[in-house]
Image (cartoon, rainbow, N blue to C red):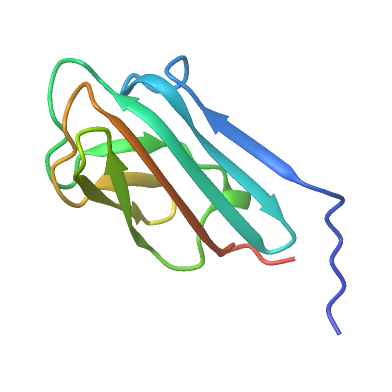
Length: 116
């Protein structure tokens, strides 16, 4: 039987200070054991939309990367939304157009690539 060796919760948050793709809010990664949950509460940049394959979040640390690339929806403040995806585990990019200057929310939970 495998024994978890991680002590407690690991946490990483990206804010507009870290990413110029964001105008407000944060993208927060939380890991407990092999399970990672990502919470999006973001306001996108003010100047232009994110087209398909444009990167929104980059520099995801190894311990928070997914075991496979994932697609997941975000809901926005105007009642629609978009889809984003992990790319090679190290970044999150738009799969559909993500509108500029708009608040988006979403959550995804997955198994980490680097299991304990």
